[in-house]
Length: 414
Image 1 (cartoon, one colour):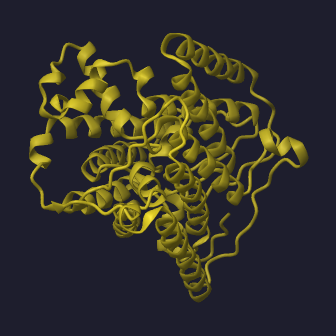
Image 2: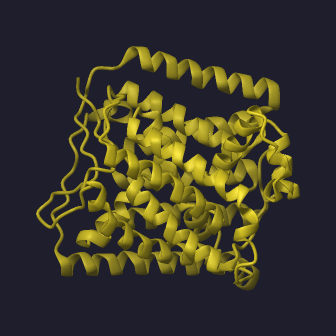
């Protein structure tokens, strides 16, 4: 059986999928039935808007899988060997999303009468500490927030452990919320409030172009290993059976992120849902989580009282998992291996816990803070990314303690 070797906490280089494995019919049927059934159920019970968000999540899962779009590996490759290919793909994703979101916000045009909700993230100790913790966690856990979801959908057992730790860390933060309040911070800055949407877009694109130039300069100086294209199906079959070019994945993900904004009025997020899912599970077990200070805040209390099928973050998360399962099965790549070394298990759980705490502390993850912040012109997104690079350096240094590999100058990467 041919399988896609997706992002793994033990791999030093990004995955290299083998082409055209046999379609895994049983898992494809189950995933397809879940995708169609969930979409119909959500649409009939909660409305078209929420069904559309679920479908957008399915698209995100398919795009993440086929392009193997990585945040964790991109930062690790840059820190370890100076390869900026992944960061340049980030710039394309961010630029695509920023352009479309600026057009939507400037025109104030949304679907389903969605109210545009843009808030500049606060800047201070919680942001920097949270971003560093998150970056360390994703290097140990083997995936970022979006990567965790699509890897779970693709059947990666190790990342299931990471997801469990992610939820546990998120719940811990909500329980210990009073401890994390009162840390020094100042109000954030939304560029559009000062220079308008065109100015905000222009500054963002200019900064992204600068990153492209800087990463090229670093890569040329450090001469990392050559970029090798992954083997893949060709022609039309490549759409559903092969590896998409990284740039294609970046553009598709940017368009879908903007589509989430168009439908919901808010940015694509991931990690709040983990806290919500954990809280609801504890409620089922009889725990009085609604008495916790975090869940007494109006917006959080409303989410806790409502169905997860009316929560945009939960819907897109569910969609990503199911969409990745559909894509992996169609590609002959869905696999589940239960044998995991104990050090890898420890790293996965610990990494997930750190990401859960870090994301809530920073007010977002690589999607909600980094992608969401930069694409909407919020200064905190850039600062989150800078702090995450520092955390990645720490995480790369810690990986060998858990038996995890790092890229080496002699490695080939894709």
